[in-house]
Length: 139
Length: 139
Image (cartoon, rainbow over all chains, first blue to last red; front, side, top):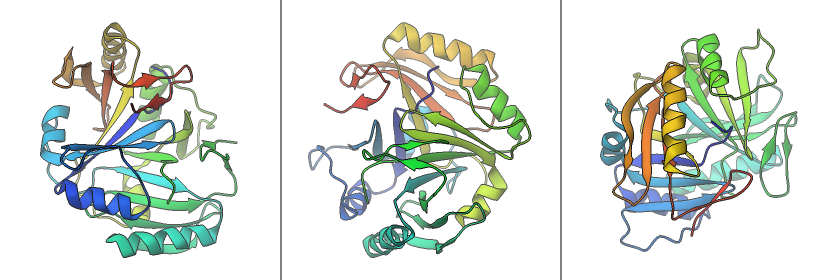
């Protein structure tokens, strides 16, 4: 198995609301208005929004609801950019369980949770390289 | 917010077991044996393994356990490669809730679930381009 992730599918209860949330953050999709799945090109991977019950059935897992042990992160170039993304996310309908602040690992981050409960840490990590194209490189 | 994912952190209950699982699939990390977080460079993003309870606390979310509405996918170049990855994953300790088979969207895929319940669809999608470096491109 090669060392990469191709697609991250977020199960959602209301596709139009979820799509509007990510579009409000500036993301764009080629999906048609009536499509039942929405794909966003996200660097070399893809983020998809799809009905959560269908995703659970397709995955072959039980869904008890709630968070499932996966947190996504979006790394940015400065602490100020962390705060700016959190402001935008809140304005788009996210909750902010952790405001931007210095972290125990020497960076600066905060967390937003999207309307379907999917959590994103927004982080400035001075130890990792963030390339021009947005990809990150471990030291 | 730029349209990309930097880091996908998988909460785990036994870090050594989780690390051994992904290493058995051929993934490599620069983490030291005693590190309490394990990072894998995964294309332009990073996959991390970290204690699930600490991840929940750090994220600021309640954790009821189980799957949480996120399924990852790993796209490969042929149906045969889907089956090969599923065989390797099962040998490494995964469960296989859905064996490799043709899908409703015109591809071929199966699903494995890692020892901590994180689900990966392994897919051959003839409609998407899979570049030499493993990144995927929407049509």
